[in-house]
Length: 483
Image (tube, rainbow, N blue to C red):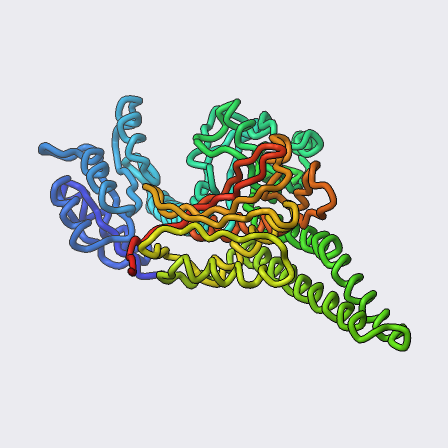
């Protein structure tokens, strides 16, 4: 017989000793005895018994039911009531304390033995169930994916922390069914109703969800979710509920879109310069006997210029990739705008008939920026101005300071941009409709936007058809000046 500690709470000394002896006869160790409810509560605290045999009718201010209720506040020890009274009123009061059994006096030893064993077994099963629930709750809350447990109608009963950390989701009301979510694919909802496990990816639109007050959120726009819905229970004993597992896969989708975008950009951007380089070098090699030295030199210069253009396109592609993946690794430092602008102008002066004007205030303005990225932005904007304006026209690079920081601009006297085209700027393949002979890159302005936003600034254009264009962007200003 295992060494089980039993506490007897009985006010009648002879009755208590009789119960103690019966327990010894059954193989249990000698039990502790308390003769009042107050003493019983104290002994539970001091001795931590495995089970309590509690007489209901105890003298004093605390009867057995009240003592059991107080014990229950600090201990989960199982209590078995001993009573000579089995009236409905007494049973109703006792039931509230959730006892593990009743023994009606007088009783046989076997009744006592069966009641104790059943109580201990039930207590052990409940402990295992609590442990299992705590383990499940720990897994549920620690899961790296969002989990929602829903009832048979698809209404959330419980949602883990990860689900509430998904951007835009602050809470899930229990009175709205996931089956009513307008973002739910109809075929998935139908399979759910039929008790099938479904998995799908969906571009989740928060505006649609807010329309039915599914989520407590102020977020607009969309995110991508990977969703799995599994019916709870088994085929034989379905519970009628659902386990919904969902994960924010927006970054993965953006990476996939970036991959497709990069492949398209490579095909779009690299074809022309490679064709020119190949054509120039082929002509120089195959026709060298028929070409003058000046003609050969011109072909080599053309190939070199296109190779430089090709190198810059690759730089743009690399910057776009880093920006899309959040890996720009900005190296900010105080830099003089004048030096960066001068370096960009010098790059374009050779081989261009445009007149470059540098309109910068004194003292020299200083900004907090990544010098290489700032030069990259300006080079893209100046290249754009050269491409979309007539030879010999003026391109002005200027800067001014304001409350939001420093504003830098590149202005040309080109063909201008229509309102419809302005809406598509800074997007991939933003080729304009009124560009004349110039070929749009579809890449440079997108890279400018990513780099400017990485500095915490913004970029925009002011333009009218036939009146030229001015591209402007903002950067944080340090306002340290030099003479």
